Length: 402
Length: 80
Image 1 (cartoon, rainbow over the protein chains, first blue to last red):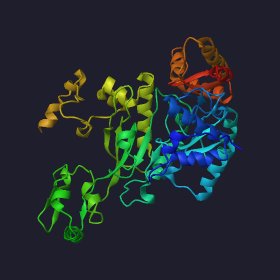
Image 2: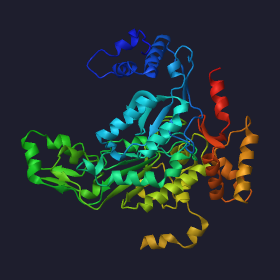
Image 3: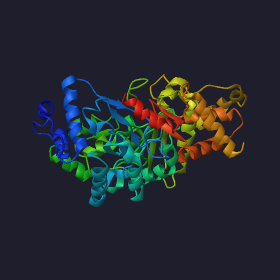
Image 4: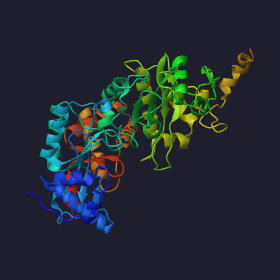
């Protein structure tokens, strides 16, 4: 029988039409002492307006530097069930596809070794298992490992790569996000499990510029599917949209950031060379417009939430990269970029922050890339091109004048 | 440098730094790079020390390498 607490403040969060995490914790609390004490502690935190958690620490599974986030409670005597309440991160399957058998297995393990409380999924993408004790960590690592799962990333390491559902369910996916994610996860096992970077490094892969995983805002390395061919137009279907009430001029033409679409009331035309690949027209006129090959990905670097500096969006590094297995080009780039960052980055400085501190020119030299116009983030802001004496000896302007 | 000797020196470096300086993996690699040890060899030696349970990765606002014996003391201290 688990301990019961009065929770008038938390009860408020069960009211209204939305699902409530309080209801779920109460269900777990009925059969698990850790979940029951978690409920009591949360009520007290709400009442006192104080968090009683201590975060961080040194617990883990032997050989792994990540995957377990130590958490301890300051009020261990009052709430002994949550004296230790470590979080375990498990590497999620690419695209978050599970069999119901796998789901049951994960939940059964967590009922046995933990609080029974989970997050499917955390913002990194991992399966998050909330609340266990230090003594159970080795057993948890072993049981998951024997059943084909592995710990995810945490700390100053590569985080578990994640992706959208990609070609498994989406008509617009231009790259195999699932295969790329699986391949990169296997390739960078050491970087994932043995923290050797100045801070976290996240890779997110999405199949198209709609960017359902928000890779452009949430990943140090964003791999975003794109296309090079012209957009195929089915004029009959475009007319059908117009007949059904869509205002093509307002909703498609006027919203095009490249100003490359025209509509004469009967035919839609796209000047593909001015297209910025935002996909607004393609998603709104679903079935009528279609991107065509060659398909590949735009590679961007450096987005992150606020920390040393404010939130940043990713920066284009490769306007177009073919994404074919075994993905050597992207792997080689990741190795060069992270080596440079590990060498010069300060503690808790993300790679994007280092690029801003030392300059994109330094970064491009380190990874062996030539500047291209697509890398210019803001006009008149990015002076990538600096002449060295040796460059001038070859009189490069003579070839330009030709 | 012989691998066992390198492991011994890495362990000693971390042990002597206790309470004074925290080493990240890259700090250890740079330390031994200055002594002429290739990065890959230092990395491999650290891996063996961690897998052998002599060193552990810790997280204190960043990931560091510390003595495994610190865990028991840490859990005693944290409840004080």
